[in-house]
Length: 464
Image (cartoon, rainbow, N blue to C red; front, side, top):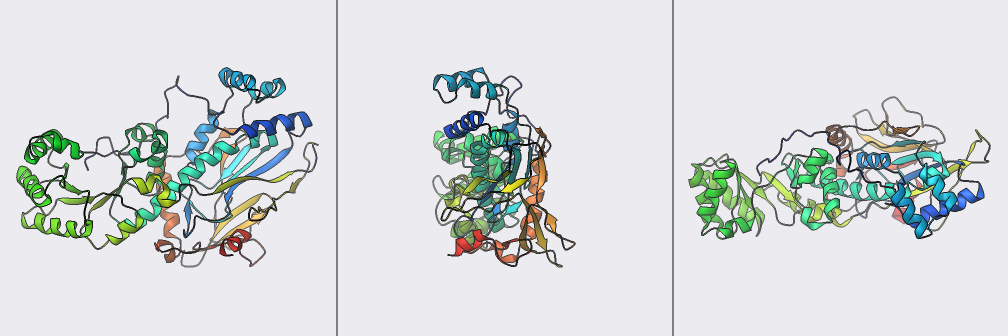
């Protein structure tokens, strides 16, 4: 598939300077009714700690991947209640005048810590920690959950796919299988988890993800015959282009492409049929025609399982659509956002007390969490260790997981996507070998609380 943009990722703003919309209404009604009640009760300014975490991984998954951090930070920058938003909230009586007045001046002034983008996570991992007043923290709940649940689900599926693909490149091409803005976010998340490019041009413009694309069956059908279509494509895009060869007869199409390029054709794409069998036949044909450098790209409803099944076939790359942008059967991570600590009074500097939800099957663990990845002498992850109220003690080579994302309201966690890609590669590589298995299984490492040998209650709940 031929590049259509500079493959080097660029740091681009998601909108032009005069086009930035507010993100404040990308939230649920009850966030503002809680705010309204807390303001009236005088508890809105009480210091609190909220955490975003998953009680369990999607069924059968062995690890998850954090994505959406950069998008969440960008959304936080634009979380402002402008005149239009406030007018809507007043007219619909979602807020009263006192609450509207508070919202008009809202600027997040707290601190946010989190797992950086591309990091792996497990049940109970404190993926995001928000330290602020109750009012400032509670109104961010829906926005953070919607971004992290979507993007991390895509990245987690993408990671399994790129692991199954090994050194063979994967290209994201699922734009037409999901909502248009979700497609852009999906392309970004897939890139973090190892995909090399996307078909989505807005992802290229907005985030600098390399883009690829050549032609569909309609381009072949437009012309009188395949030779005419291929000649037109090669004339426009060069001999290194990728020809789609299964509109009619694959053998004839491959021969035609090789003839038109003198054996220098870049690649052929197979989009139907038994891909393993077809790829072997096409490889033999290409080699017999002297086109030994022509690559074979396969598409057609691929997922991590079909990619793994094609590992022994002479395939050079994969194009993945529907399964990727739907999380390969798990379109959400099940992240929740819970209050885990609050000041024991409204006095300045009042100490924090732990609070926790005790409802059946929806438990949470009280107290502000700190996390590190315990690494053994060989460099392999052994477990996730969580400290409550204070960081757990490292045994020398353990890796802290939480990094500052926002300090006193100022975003400090921005980074290029290339750093997230490299972080993901390293984080996945340090997991035990069982992480690469496609079969259903338990999380590949335990989550433990410092000072105890027991796994976290989230793991115990999953296995019941």
